[in-house]
Amino acid sequence: MSLEDISDLLRAMNPTAAANPIASLVETTRRDVPEFADVVLTDDSYLAIGPVRDARDHLRDLAATAPLQDLARAWKTAEGVRQWALDLCVRVEEELAAGQLGEAALESMNGRYAMAGLAVLSTLKDRDRSPAQHALDALVLLYQLGEFHRLDRLIPGCQWHLLATDGLMPPPVREQLQDLISRDAPHAGPGVDVRPAS
Figure 1: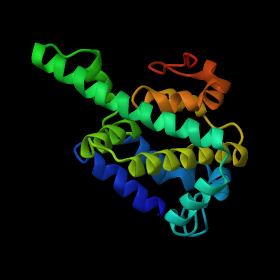
Figure 2 (figure 1 turned 135 degrees about the vertical axis):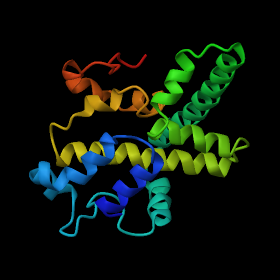
Figure 3 (figure 1 turned 60 degrees about the vertical axis):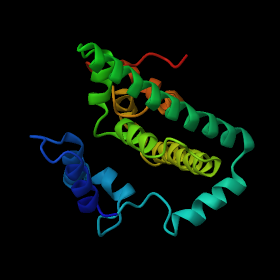
Figure 4 (figure 1 turned 90 degrees about the horizontal axis):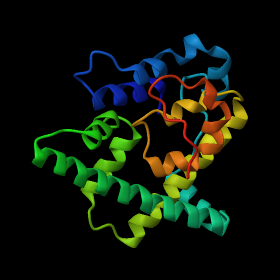
């Protein structure tokens, strides 16, 4: 996808927002940080990271070559994401039934247009997830985690503490990225949870 396509997608996810900081960052990458943009973007502003062929072939290769412990960790994390999403929905419904919105509603709203919200939507869309879908979720997650670490090698000094921002990603995924997040955690600003994973 081009940066323009990514920006359009991000804005379409929240069309009524007065501001969309993540879309703005995408739109200004080339202008604001050209030295980094040259590493992660092609000349025509497409992402230079990620598979350059059919993603299904890439995931099949990943399944065949990834260490078993990495596959097992991704499987467990994918299940953790699903359980977190289902639990969050139950807690929000309980708050709604009680007529008192609380922590669950805030957590849900914070993640509504980020990876956390997409995980909730995906879980609700497929409440009876098959083992094959679980395996696909685990492989996609393993791929994503690998890309974060590859990006860290390409561009040292990324602001990884931002991944700890409440609502950005499901807590089980955030826990898998603690090695990146905690590296520069002291620089985290307000509203960022920088507690180490338990």
